[in-house]
Image (cartoon, rainbow, N blue to C red; front, side):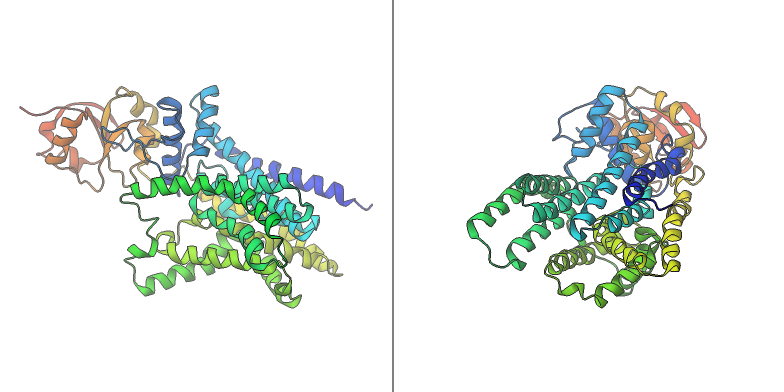
Length: 487
C-alpha cells in the first residue's frame, strides 16, 4: 500500500515533538546542571528577579550585585521577561522555563521546515531539514535550557522564512513579519543581527533592475524595526565593563597554535558531532557535492547566502578566542545554513532510483534521535553537575537557612551566578579561596550578614574567623555563618 506524502508530512511533523518529549522527559523536572549551567543559572536568575523584584523590562537584574541594585543590561531580555510573565501566573517553578524553552525549540523546528520549503519549494527536502535540525545534538541539548540563544535562533529562522515567503508571494505582511522577527532575534542576541544581511544583500547587491521607490520602501519596511536593537546595544555596550564579548580578538591572549586548534577542533569535532549529528553528516557532505555538481552556485539567489556565510565566518574568527571548543551555543547562527544543506543533500540521496539509497536515508533519519541522545545524555548526569554538588543536594535547606532578603557572601563560585541561583541569595562572591580579612570587612560594612562557604581554607582561616559570629548550618561541604565586625 502506497502512503500519500501528505500523511508522511503530518506523521513527521507530529513525530518530531513526540520523540523529543520522550527523550527529554526526565529533564523537564531536573534542576540546572552540567555544561553551560553558568549561562543557564544567569538567565534563570534574571527571570526570577523579574518575577520577584522588578517587572520593568529594561531592568534585568543579576544576584551577584553586592549591595547595589543588580541591574545588568546585556542582551535585550525579552525572553526572560516573557518567561517571568508566566511565573506571575503559575509561580516560581523551573519547569516553566524548561517547557517554554522546549516550545520555542519546536517553533524553531517548524520555522526550519518553512524556511527550507520557501527556498527550495520542496516539502520533502523541508521535512528532512526540520527532522535533522531537531536532532542537532547542540540544539537538542539547549532546547530545554533557559537561554536567550534559543529564542534568538527561533526568531532568526522565522525572520528568514518570512523574507523568502515575501520573495515568492510579494505580500507586505510577510515582509513586515520578517522585519519583526529579525529585529527580535537581534535584540535577544546580538550576533543574529547578521541574519539581516540576507534582505540587505537581496535588495542592494544582487538584485537587478530595482524600482527605486517601490523596493526602497520595502527596505524601510523590513529594516525600520532594526532601529530597536541598534538603539539598545548602542546604549548598553558601553556599560559592559569586564565583558570581552564585544572586544573579541582584540583582547586575545592565546597563541597562534591555540587559535589553530580552536578552528581545527570546531571543524573536525564540534561541527559533525554537536552541530550536525553524525547521522546527518552524510547528508551534509553529499549536499556539498551536489551543490557543486549541479552548479547551484550559479543560481541568482546563491550570492545572498554566500554573503551571510562570509559574515558568519568573520563573526566566528572575531569571537573564536571566546568560543573555544566549549561554547557551542555561540555557533547557533550557523545552524540554518547547515541544515538547509543537510535537507538538500538528504533529498538528493532520496530521489535517486536506488532502493539502497532510500533505505540509507530512512536509517539515517531513524538513528538521528538516538545519536543525539547518546551524545548529550551525559550532560544531564546528576552526579557530574559542573559545580559543588552539595549546593544541589541541600538546595532547599541552604535557601531557607537565612532570610531571603539577607545579603550574603558566597563561594567558591567562579561563575558569579551558579551558587547565587542555588542559594537564592544576593550579595558578593569569592572564588579560588580568595577571601581575605580586608574583603570580608568591606562586605560586612556594605551590608553582608551571612557567609556561605564550601572552603575550609576560608572559614578556618585565623584572620577570617573573628568575622564569623556563629555557625548557623552545615550541609555537606557547605557551612553558613552569621557575620560580625570584630571589636
